[in-house]
Length: 231
Length: 222
Image (tube, rainbow over all chains, first blue to last red; front, side, top):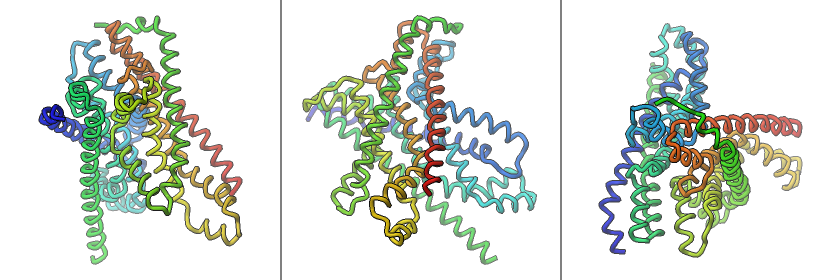
């Protein structure tokens, strides 16, 4: 038992690294998914280049939802540096892989959100002469996120869990250190219990943050409705 | 350094075997979890607190903990209490445990989506409970949940790749092996990735086709 306490500092640092990897990958996946999702959704009136862009995004989704993130990490970390002289760092390999993987799911979440916006609102926006960007920002964004947030947060949790795959290419995050401590102390069950509780708590935290954002969005969108109603 | 995919040619037979193992791991995991989830579903929706709470806890834990950790528990921790397994068995067990948690919730979502009027209509027609479940509720829940169940099947295929980390030589494992012996990591993992892409596209396509048939049959019943 004493042995395991000696590793607590090391483990704590590794947990921080897991959190850092998660935050970077969540941001990467969300930015990618939201950007592509707003282009991917079908609208009555839209810039002409959205149609070919949709084909490309569809190919992206099909490809990156089909490759296991671990294979992506292997490909980026071992493959790219073996094929060309540019080498990708451990952290970058993990963050890029997870962003591409999770982003492919977030595109669909955002698309579903946008397509749930009543058609009349989009038509009203173009009748008012709003450009596509202001239409996205002022008309579609709020109801889209109100619908998409729960499933997006679900993908955030998947992201946190998938940072554990980084141990496969040797990133010093929580799972890697847990394996090290297990080998050093032989306390297999205890180590895995602590690791499990750690991931569980991080994910509870992520879910909580998601809930707060969700409430903020729904509150402010109800304020908008009130303003519109009183006007 | 130029790319040379010809180094992979001698491994043709290994690729077939590795693909077979990947399919075996993911399909076994999926089928077992589909059955387990069906068994756990009544407990999850039970009126008895202990059953409902127990399955809820199972689902919550398994959905918030990395599948890799589940795999390590099965492979490294269970032997300490006398349950020793081969790596492929451990992979199937971990996949099933993980996938069950998701499928229970998918099934439950399908059942919860059924409008209450169905129950009232059934009792107005004085249908037996058996008829209600087999002819009305389950087919309708299956129809709602069908796409999500397909996504879970794909998740099982992707999840089976973790088996490489406990030494199984499925597709990812083979890619790693070829990479480390020939140092052609890029060619090896690109090929592996392409095989996964084709595999998942085929599965998705097949599942959609199956779904259309299931839905059509249901429509005839309705």
